Image (cartoon, rainbow, N blue to C red; front, side, top):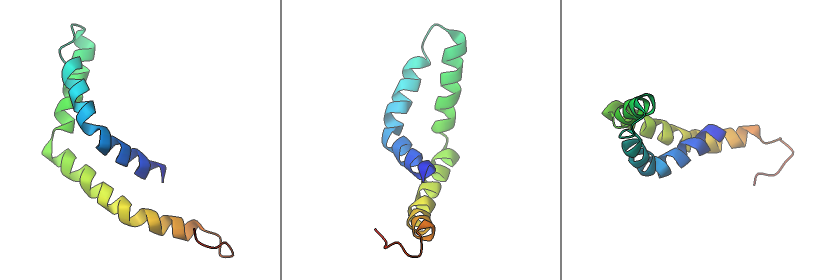
Amino acid sequence: MQRHDSLIIYLELQDAVIDALEKISSWPDKNTSSSANQLHFVINNFEFQITIHIISTVFAVSLPLSKLLQTHPNTPNT
């Protein structure tokens, strides 16, 4: 459940993350700017975007099922 929440939060903040990485990529510190540039490249990769959206869709289906399966048999569903 925490992974699902983390993924949703990331997707909501993805544009801000990309903007931040673009800015950090221009910093004078070569180590930091290089790492930011690499992350920016990976995040903008088509395969990454497709994968993260597929995982989000799968989690959207599996999360309610997971919650249902974790409820105690004598506990009413909420």
